Image (cartoon, rainbow, N blue to C red; front, top):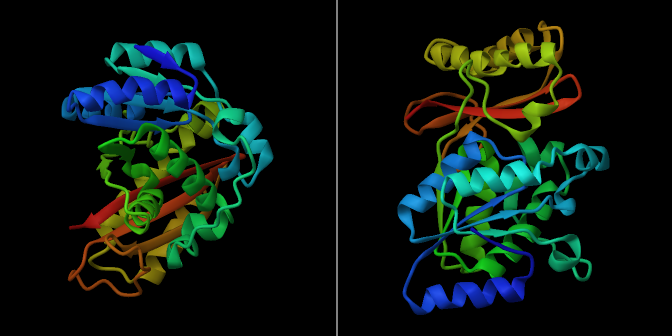
Length: 281
């Protein structure tokens, strides 16, 4: 696996693969890799002769500087994991490389950043758009892979790709879960022992909502989620939202004419976790 720090060097290496007509798959990450990330790499390796992964903790998408400071970083372990799944190139830029000057771009996501994560984390998705476009410009991939845990982020990235006419196929890959159902996340490593045990309640709540969706209206489902989560000692519900899976428009009534997804954000102690589940398709 080649490790590259500079965009100019990355461009030189990838240009040779393009001359050979080899499609390039790309998996952008912020490191602290787990099996969820590796599933994206495996999918890219399966689909493409060349796979690039990036590790960069992007400061512009953090609206909480403490969260940025505490974000887990395991560079040595990350590199070994990427080698184990046959990643071809690891791009590890620093802040100076990605932001040689302040990025003042402001993106228009329509209503997509006015709900859920966008509402709760102002500016977050604009920071995501800044770094994703910079990485897309650096790598120029044919396909890019993202995990469905970041359900809203995928919709944002697809909009960027469409609006800016990137010739990149965005591939959303299934959520990878721990044995007890908790969605894999780099932030899980920050949980205290009891918080980690209780965090399984997040997925259990989504499963119960999936079971109840046919018989219970949405307001009642939200009340159920609030009670289920907040009655767990170290958990606190940030939001539960049920949205149209395709458009992300919140729904007020279940009709079964369109697929819907339940999206949830929960604080486990001071650590904020997100998850989602398709209620029916």
